[in-house]
Length: 63
Image 1 (cartoon, rainbow, N blue to C red):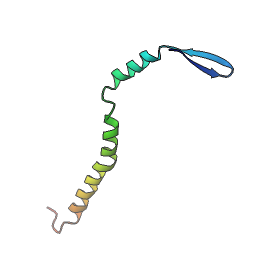
Image 2: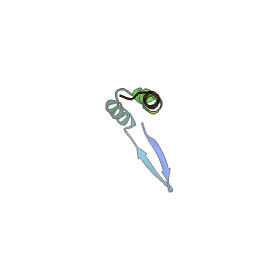
Image 3: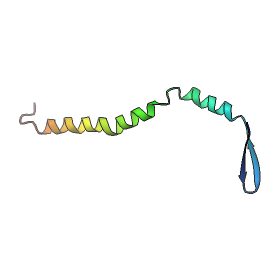
Image 4: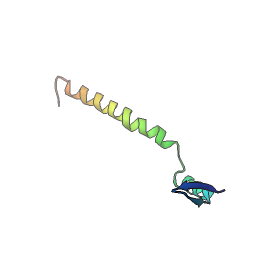
């Protein structure tokens, strides 16, 4: 499979695209993990942390 890219009036041939895709699939076998972990780390963990700290500082008696 060949893809031709036109850059500054020259054509460059990029080959072996399929091998590059296979290489990236081997590196990241679980490609669905970022779509789970990003919201978890960015939204859920801070929410749990802020809620627990709020409950801790609002207690009448801190042990």
